[in-house]
Length: 98
Length: 473
Image 1: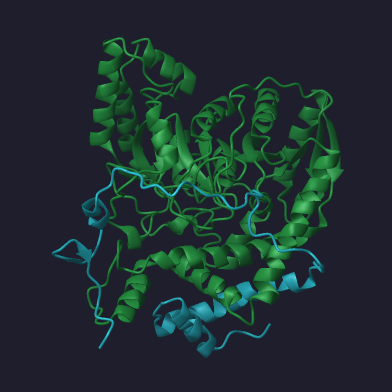
Image 2: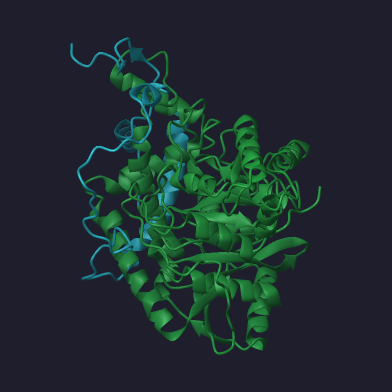
């Protein structure tokens, strides 16, 4: 495959919610191109007609009863690691609507 | 400091009042302190460990029943959520994170009285095979300080071989329990996918992540597995365990058919390692086993398959680190999008970023069919080839890794070179079968592991053959 362009890397970074420095853009351009070049071999695989496997347990439709359970955690416990909290016990995030 | 007794012996000594749990905790913590320069441990949990040990000692003094592992110290890889310490996954993005709940595996061990004394170093988010991708430090191989212990459970494995505790917990998504076991001379057991709950373990690749023990002997590993295995409501991919205890390991090698994997014994395998593997299978033959060669042609493409599927799942699993609910949040961010971008860019290390972007690429519409779907189809083919192999043999065997422990810095400049270390281990994760690395001698004083594999859900049988083989090697 052709090497990734600078724009390709920037697009990937944007989709991944990553902001890269100039140095990183070049570095990842080289490294990711090499890795994608390696996995390109998959194109040689003869997998005609095979179903994709996405899990190996064979389990289907695993459910539990729709009951409230007490896991011993309060809202305070769960918010303890939050970077920003509003006074009334909510997570605070940046403004989304202008 | 001396090597620990077996877990069962240690537990019996505590139970019988011959030794106090608090003394065992102190011993573990002292060893950790004395061997700090190996960089195996990220943090210790002295307060909670002492508290629990004291409580166990008091229960015993009162004649109360205590758990099977009461008083036995252990170390958990720092991607297991635990109380009493931070859980960082060796990443800057989780520095300071205090888990509001514990991993099910930890809960199960604690229910039997085992005591978590420390969190071990790993490649950040378990992305790696050496601990060189840890955001904090590189762990040193107990046999040679200039070499890596392997990874990603390098800290856990080194800790056990440095006698910091009788056992440790690791995770294996592509070899991360088995390869460090091979590099350090430990026993590293990777169970059937789903046998041990993934709840409370920082997710890497959800369809391949497994949890397992690092220990000095198969007997110890089996006991730990017996405690942590079992269906968990909190993990919808968990399966039922065997009703027979995993500690029931009676076994006869006579008449058993072992398939040596052809594709694992060819070019790329270090000749010294090859010699040790062949010596091991020779010993098994002398004990009555039949050694045959099996071939699974799709193994030629297994690494390509793995490095499409796993980064794809990683990119999905790491999207939760967005700086909003927990983890590093960048203070310069003005908008929400800024907050995502800056928090992730400053928090994640290079390998995490690399894998996220590769995963994003192969899942992008337009590329999805060519890469991800194709890899998932190859995965089906691999499962079929393993099934065909197991219809001819009872177990499979081969090396764990192409070499013994490499030098720190030797492969870390080239990500692709690092990925090639996993060539003999990743297939096992893709098909979900159990596998174990047991010590099989040394090459120039560096340990080599023999990898044994069994069909899905035959963990007890695999542990049994591993124990037998351990005895004859």
